[in-house]
Amino acid sequence: MAERTPIIAANWKMHKDHLEAIQLVQKVAYHLDEPDYEGQEVVVCPSFVALRSVQTLLQSERIPITLGAQNCHHADEGAFTGEVSVPMLARLDVRYVIVGHSERRALFDEDDGVVNAKLQAVQRYGLRPILCVGESLEQRRSGSAVDVVTGQLAASLDGVSVEDPESLVIAYEPVWAIGTGETATADDAQQMCATIREYLAEHWGQVLSENIRIQYGGSVKPGNIRSLLAGEDVDGALVGGASLSSEDFALIVAHRR
Image (tube, rainbow, N blue to C red; front, side, top):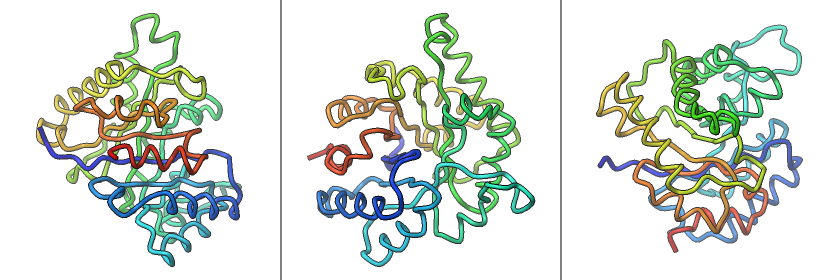
């Protein structure tokens, strides 16, 4: 089995102004010791208005946390009121950008074509997309979960080439388990992450597939992080609500203690 660096990413969604964001990162760093970071990558994705403040804190305090963004526009610049481009994010030392989150798909009508354009824009500037895929409860109950997830992969990755497996992260987030308190079992997470890896192997080759990191996202908590990450194809977690608590997120990061 390939040695992949686990990635634990916090998606704060529309929470925390820039002052609250600073305080949250400081508290997380207070709860963690240097060994807690070793062997894995920790990412925080604040709102756009907090990015500069968090960037300054991480750099000035030398906190070993990587900065991520929750969204982007696919164009480099233009008359797109209210949008933020990838070059703007790059200037803030953002390293990761979430694309295709289920909330963007469901609430803002982003289809796979939009996701594909954003993903390619992120890669064009050397940032790393966290591509989210996942099925609804209705799709899961109908037995079409695998078809939905592989269909999203096919469309979102159309025309995308990956030479460095570290340059792409895929997050499996069952929509029915986001913010509902419901969680896929460890076996559920492993099975779908393995299916994603099999799809990548078919289309990009076994070597690349074995080295791309696949996260699980969906009501991740301190109490289930160990079992979720026990799956050999689960390489980390995309954490929503629990990442808004410094204690909970620190426990998730320090799950190996």
